[in-house]
Image (cartoon, rainbow, N blue to C red; front, top):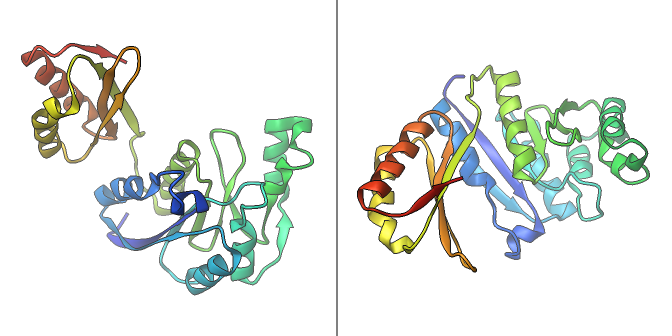
Length: 245
């Protein structure tokens, strides 16, 4: 994959009102950076037809790859599919291969509503969904994924492999539970690990309840095992109690 640029569109009212936190921006950065690509621009947009049609109309025929997350479900607030069709100047039609995938996954429960997700821009190509078989789609170099990270991120990997001949190691996650300390007690260790292993993402998730603990770990591709082992060594050197997950 040669050095290049890409655009990113993240769609969802829930992100703009704060009821959900976006995770796609950081993931796309971490995915594209090691491949020599950078993001040329990023748009965070509401589920608004006029707004989406205006944005997609400006970019859908460009040579720049654009990755779009969100709004391709079956509920009335999901309008990305029809907006992509309008922007491309084509009809929204029932895609027979998408129907077959949805029927294979859900059987009779595909009707009457789930099958709506097979209404796609005429002439589009499908992006396979390894989680529930409801596909994404592409129009030119615009790639449309669901908003759910567990579905969208493997689909992004598939696009990069299929269309840009990228060799990607599987995304991995390793974590452990840390007890009897606060996050502030771990900052020096976390900063040292981040500086030494910039290719993976460290995360720290406090859990407050009957058994308070911090889930501490790494998410990434190459180098995650080395970073995780150094995390364990750092905890053991300071006699901090932990439990592997």
